[in-house]
Length: 479
Ligand code: BGP
Image: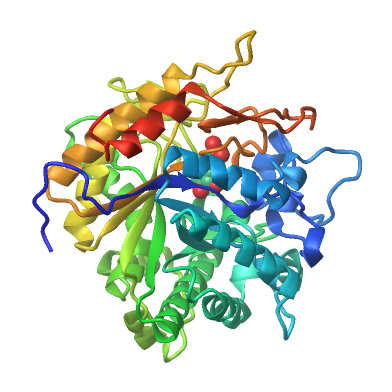
């Protein structure tokens, strides 16, 4: 349905987004099993591991892992949710840790303590009329399944994931309406271990491994969507893409084509999840690369029957590419996707391209392509915050980043794009996924905690807290 609107809809789901492994802590409490992210320390080693080069599945004793305690949401969720409510949140995106529910991934019965934890969290949200938006798997696969099956390399994962999905759908069917299957499903190609628990040690045919694993996730996602709709027909179940338009560096048609191919690397996943079948360009890619993706006879139907209701996506940056070897030589890895420097855009302290207009472009692309409601489920600025002497945090740079993106999001809505909500990333400071550190902060709420585990964990409202509260109160009119 095309919507004509000059502004944000009345029902717009303003809020914030979190992931279990980056906010909860309590990494072995309440019977929780070890997950992949629990094994990723900070620094260079994290980069290597997240790309799939890991062989030892035990956390080191003498190294501090910030995510093991994170910001202790596990024990402080009431206080944190009260702060979100104070800002006027209409929604909170968060994920369930698979290994709190099935510690190894293979138990017959779920872990009741884990289930109760999320009951409490959802009840607390509902108390304030905050709509939970729940990701089933946000970068955390039970380590046991990685060791036993090689994670998503194996077809075994499909039924195990379906069982997990059905368990939580049944349990929370009267508390949660909005769901997402896999966070940033396309991250599997770029950070196979971080995204999907896939190790590449000893693998020669990397694309074969990755696209086979992708097929397993796509089937598992479709089965979950199908089961969810059966359990509660009112469920809205989405996919989740790490989005960001790719621009050609010049008007050379070769550059344009390369940019299109780069975008399709990501759209591939959403084409399957939203349209229910493999696109022609993917089948050609498999042929050209000599990939032999094993599919079971029923898979075609499963993919058709399990298409998503909405398209969730993260947007931090646009990307830029070129076919010119000279230009590529100066390439910088502007973000996880690798991008050459775009002379027309700025960058964050971590070199991530800042391109507000790219949000409008990306939203329009996704709408043109899928004609399904869009949900901006991640966006924000990772920055170092330095408290003033009196303890206040004046994060004007964050306000500026968000304001510019909100202006473009509003433009997209005026373009007729159906955007149902916006949850900014890390509304409270949390552990960074790419660095594993505390110092890259996104929050409206500051947490007194550093990379080494020092600090009181006290929560403090930043300047952006009051600004976002006004944005929500005025439904995006006061930016
Ligand atoms: C996305 C992830 C999040 C998140 C965010 C910001 O890729 O879905 O988990 O962390 O990026 O990244 P970072 O924390 O590395 O700054």
